Image (cartoon, rainbow, N blue to C red):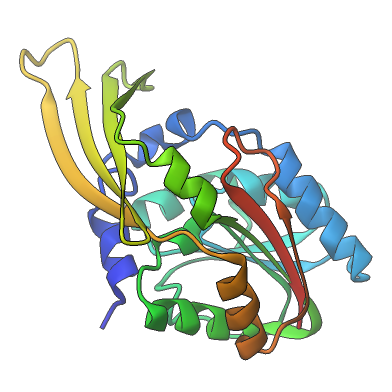
Length: 252
C-alpha cells in the first residue's frame, strides 16, 4: 500500500497532468543547491559520488550533479516527473517508487532530497522516509536536505491569492492560481489550473487542495538522530526566492 504522500504525487496536477509546466513554475536557480551538495560530498571525501536523488522531480539538479562528475540515481513517486527526468538524464537509473518505502537497494555515498520532505504529513511517513534514507546511505555517507522551516513558513501562508502564467511548448497557456493558509502546523494550498489553447474555446480547469507540513529544527534533530545520522548541521536555505527554507546536512 502506498503512503499518502505517494498517492498525492499521482493525483496532484502539478506533479502529474501539468508536470510539463513544473520547471517554468518552480524557477529557482539550480546552481546554489548543486554547489552546496557538491561541497558536502567533497568535504566527506567523495569527489565522484554515487548519489540517490530522492524526489528528483524533473531532474534539473541531478543533471547538474552529473555534469560535475557524480553518478546519480533518480527516484520519485510521480511517473510524469520521472519521465521528464529520464529524458534529461538518459544514462541515470530511474525508479518510480514511494519515498517512504523505496523499491531500491544498495549503498549510496549520499542521499539528497530537495523540497519533497515537506509533502510528508504524518509522523510515520517522516520516520519511514528518513529510516529508508539511512538504510541506503553507506557508513560515512552524507545526507543533504532542503526543507521548509515552520516559523517562516507560517508567515508566508498569508491567505493571499497568487497567480502565475506560463507558455507551454505545445503552444497552450497555463494559468496557475494558488492561495496558502496556515492550519495547525500545515500549509494548506488551494490550487486552480486553467489550461487554454487556441483551438479550445473553454479552458481545461483542474482544482486541488494540497497540504505541506514544514519542519522545526528540533524535529529535524530528533528524527535524524533517531535514524542514525550525526554531525547534523542546519543553515538558511540556498538558491531559494523565499527565506523559509533550511539546508540540512548530516553524516551516517
